[in-house]
Image (cartoon, rainbow, N blue to C red; front, side, top):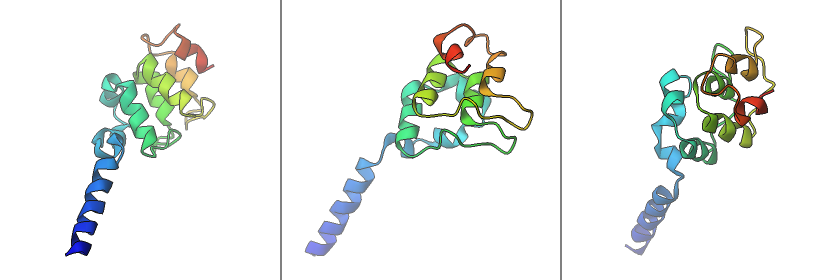
Length: 117
């Protein structure tokens, strides 16, 4: 009986101590335009803390940072760069996050925008 209680206590502790992002289904939706339009900086930080690869690539060759640069906010781009995202990565079309940021009016001219160059 003591062993059973101990196992249950360990399982409960493990479940409660997991980073929030592992409970967040959002981290796996990074290839979605809507994901970047609505994600908060703390969610990105939670995803990174749970082991999310900030240099992951989609089938089209776009990195996480490329999606954020094209569709995201200043905060999302800054959070990814702070977490070590590679701004010099090139996609299948030969474009970098900086190139894609040219199409994001919300990002243009901000510190995050210039951090991409």
